[in-house]
Image (cartoon, rainbow, N blue to C red; front, side):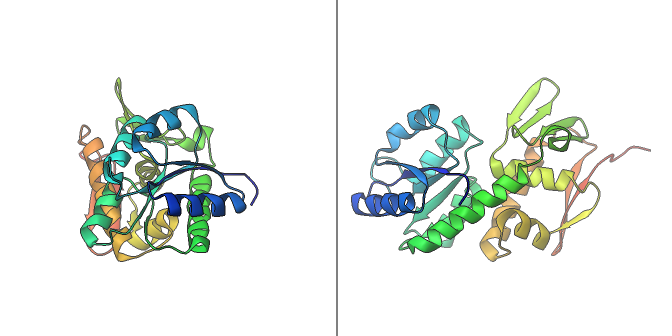
Length: 235
């Protein structure tokens, strides 16, 4: 597998937590399993993780609340949900919180490993270019995609992994149509209904972040994709 990835598993079901921990270790992942959501932030502070796997239906703190706390404190840590809740509203809420994937129980362990490796592989490829390739000037903003920071004057917004990936993709093709299919297959790995809904959520986030500069705009081309328009109003 090459690099030994470090995984944080947050699961309060003892049987499932043990099963997944042993299986992922057998597949050469470095994994820490935590049953108590209240201990997770301290764990992230004291360890380096490549990915967090969060159960949604936990007794003391639900996974959605935990994910929001993680995103606030450690926006660069990517996470996925593992849950029995499969209603559309739950899936969309999971993606709106920044999840890279939403896996439904019961899940086949081999499928879980394939999905984890696919996600981490895409993250590695998307963050593989540093220095000049990680800095993008977007109107009055500056994006550092390697640190996932968006600067405007003296202010800085710490983006999530997905927000940074998406803005980098759009900024790499200024004033060009970025089709839904191309964005989703590059960043999400799959052009399906839930991922398209998730894409729309993240575009909304980026529009809010970029609202201070009237010379730039993320325009929706109905049924086709998005255009990051720059130099609006300039002659």
